[in-house]
Amino acid sequence: MDLTAIVVSFDDEQLLRKSLSSVREFYPELKIILIDGSPEYSECRAFIHKIEDKKVDKCLLNYNISHGAGLHVGIMLSPTDKVLCFDTDIVIKKPPVEDMLKLMDEETLMVGRVYEQPPTNWQVKLKREGNFKYVYPHFHIVNRPIYRKFLPYVHSGSPGNLHFLDVFNQGQEHRIKHFPIDDYVIHNQMGTSRKHPKEHKEGWLIQTNYFPANYGN
Image (cartoon, rainbow, N blue to C red; front, side, top):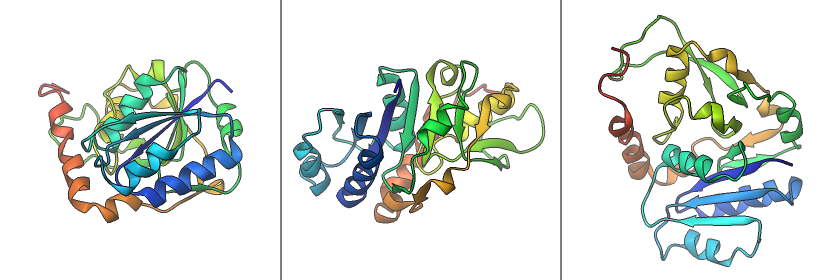
């Protein structure tokens, strides 16, 4: 399978253990890049040090990089152009990846659960009115060469907000394909952010440092 998986964790050993086990149950040979921002002496970091799976590459940080920026780093580190991003608060019910890959081609940006998001009051001047398509981040596949044409994933909570707003503004939403991932994956929404609300809020604030001041002008 020409695919690499990315997961970003922050100081929640139980969620990480459960999600990794679930992915491994269905995809024992899948290469996984683990981006971890847990404190060095936390239970989560201790668990990661004990992982013996040779197909898990560990990128260990000593700071909270935030969900979105961590995903971006993982996407850039991936040895394959097709990248599966999954959250630590998911459990797979039945294997979705094969069916998702059937929707991917060279011009596809992303495959996942799509919904329409209304523009917010960020520092951005929209070039046209209306909602923009957003792919829910908990389990989706990214085509890296197309992903790099737009603003990167940045903050926590909804890491793709700026990315998908850029896709919207460039008139490229046809590159996004919907997949009914809820039929395949259980999502315990906001698992890490409920445990670490302070760090979650800090991750949201990171977005302003990445957004070009003159974007949309």
